[in-house]
Length: 106
Image (cartoon, helix red, strand yellow):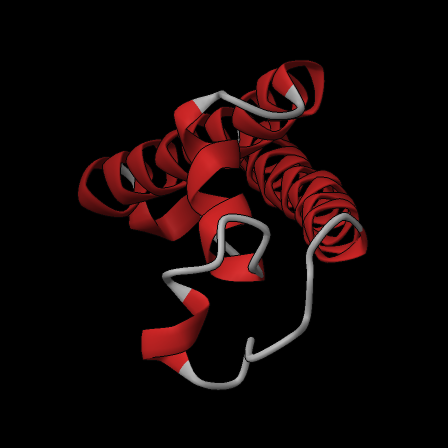
């Protein structure tokens, strides 16, 4: 039984690490894509940047709203959802095992 519990916790932890890596990749892709199409004039001054429709801040807001790059947004949201599901599964299963059978955990 302890081997099964050990393998389960390792598999869930590995799944969470992989999910984080995938989400990190898609987050980097989003950042580089949004920054690539942005106008950087006055981007470092927040009150001026918000008035510019092509500023990085406004482009990211438009990305979140789904106005630009809808295919990238779907992939990015799936990656974020995968992270959430993976970490919830990891903490629920390991927490349940700690409450029920702590002697089987490594």
